[in-house]
Image (cartoon, rainbow, N blue to C red; front, top):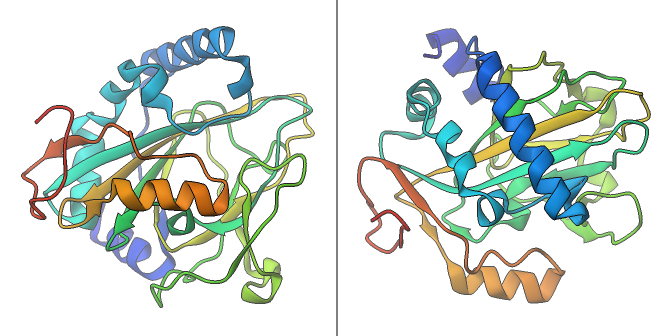
Length: 252
């Protein structure tokens, strides 16, 4: 579990690196599953935005009791997993993730998600680790984003340059098996991978069930912004109950 100090760090900075490590045998299985995914769907070599649509076996990692215990400390005991994705930056050619807030992309009302980002490989400055803007979540607002459909970008919504100071960014350097947790409003991004080492990371998106995964908004956002359409996304109740009474779960 997170210590009191780590919970305070999450609340103050918007992210935290816990002590928990994913076991090596689990990492090996994730790498093998990812290799099979890419063999079938080479279009996802860099980024697979809806991992569970392609292989729902990945959900077992989000069900780890140790992960759910940490998430519960941050968003409460009633938890849904609404998505998992794979950000894989292949050696020498991994894409850039522009500065953004996750909530700009997501059809959750009210906006609330704790993302667990698991390093499947070592994540370093050289291969494009995450960079976070500490405290950028505190006002709980979405900042202006511009659509950027240029080449070499993993995502197409980019925060206006007037909304952040890159000199304040903190790199999150992780060994394979380590993870970070971050808030839905936190400003973050990552550089391209120009190193000879891959940088694979898997995300687990947990929301409190007091929020609603709104499938109508998902369709509207996809049409308006050219985003991945989350309208048919499977949502899993991981613990507790649906406080909103309006979510639909695949395992209900």
